[in-house]
Image 1 (cartoon, helix red, strand yellow):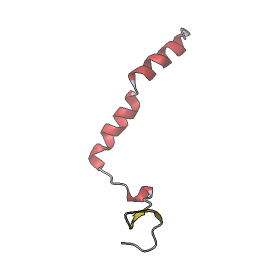
Image 2: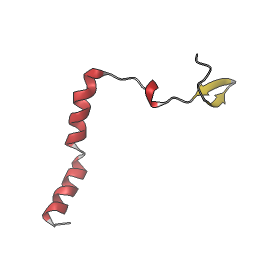
Image 3: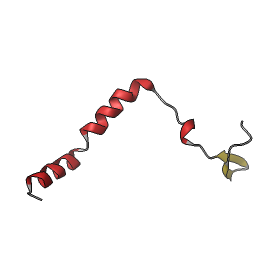
Image 4: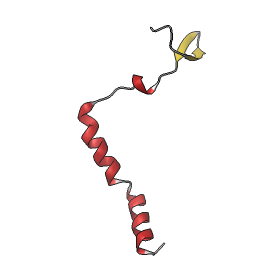
Length: 57
């Protein structure tokens, strides 16, 4: 393990390292799906904004 990583805590005597965003796994195959899910929005949020735009809310 890298010795320059920051230790966040110890559990049962073992160090727990702080993980930064660079250490997160990345799957290129999920990029399009993630984008589509973000654009689709949550149903309740979509309904809310439709009502706001129509002046119903």
